[in-house]
Image (cartoon, rainbow, N blue to C red):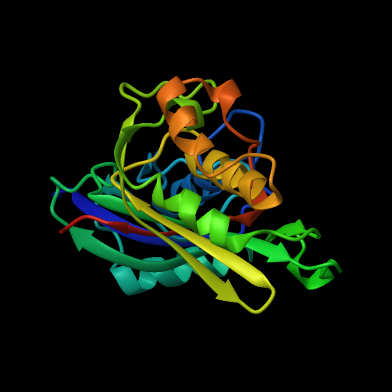
Length: 247
C-alpha cells in the first residue's frame, strides 16, 4: 500500500502543556497527538511541524504533517482524533498533500500578542492575556514597532538556547489593533527566533511605560546583545495565528 502525506491544522490552548515539541517527561501538544495517532494506526507516527511554540503559548493555526498508510478517510480520522483529544486541543482539518510537502518549509508565519491594559484584572482572561494595569503610551509603542520591520539581525531579541543557523529574519508586517481594553500586536515574518516575538513585545511595553525611548530600538538591534533589550513578555498572551506556504 502506498504511503500518504496528511496535513493537519491544529488549534490549542497551551496553558497545561510544556509547549508543542515532544518531551520525555512533560505533557506537550505533539506528545498528546502522537500518542493518539499510535493508538489509532497501531504504529509510531512522527509529526513534522511548522512552529515549536513554547510552554503556555496558544495556537489557532499550527500546521503539522505525517506520513502513513491510508487506513481511514480524512473525515473518519478527523472524527476519531477530535473525539479522543483533550478539550484544549482540536484538529481543525485534515487533508492529503503531496509527499513532497513539509510543514517546516513555510513562507511566512503570523503571531499575535494580547495585552489587557486595564486597572482591574479580568478573571475570564486568565492565562490568555498579559494583564498590564499601568498606562501605556500607544503612540510610542507603534513608532517603536515600525523599527522592527524589514530584514534584520534579531540577535538582541533571541533568548538563549535557540540554536538557529542564522539570526537574520525578515518581518514583513506589524500591526497594533485596539480591542476595547485589549491591545493586540500582530507580527508576520519569514520566521522567528526563540521567544523573538515575546522579547519584542516586552521591549515595546517597556517603551510604552517610559523605561526606554523609541530611538533605543535601533541601538538594541545594532548591539546584537540580548541583555541590551527589554523584558520577555509572558507566554500566556502569545498566539500562533496562521502559517502560509504559498505567496
